[in-house]
Image 1 (cartoon, rainbow, N blue to C red):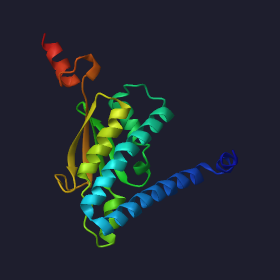
Image 2 (spheres, one colour; image 1 turned 90 degrees about the vertical axis):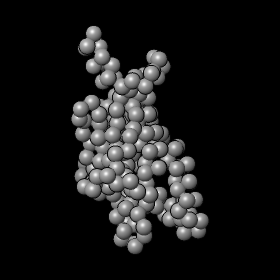
Image 3 (cartoon, one colour; image 1 turned 60 degrees about the vertical axis):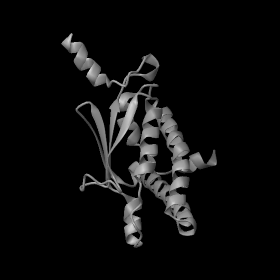
Length: 193
């Protein structure tokens, strides 16, 4: 392919810059269509279409990253940590990802979407409902046992030092008679026996 030859001719630094440019272009396109619908039909209609788009896109992105990383079917929280670091958002938002006490915490410290809306004098994007679809859907592709909980996201901000925060936990495999018990709770009960 001709394009691969062009990419091979670039330095590592140029390739990183190109990835960042592509990620910004992707986000700009996402914002352009969203704001077009928002202006013509209102926030509620734009949010409906945003949710529909994310139901599909988040799974596509997760599958491609999972394949790229050669992750197993049940990659666990460690696999999710690796995959989140390679999302398009990871190249344009400032975030932090950390494992703590049997959970993975993902926090967006600076969000280009919200920053752009503030800069344009627009109200903040009410991203929590779509964020639930986005992050839960992404995590489920990485490992079907992973559950997602919103810690803080507009309009329900509980942590003021970040734009949004999501907590991921690992639960029993649903194909093995899941009763909704978390793996850590099962381990605690097992150690008591």
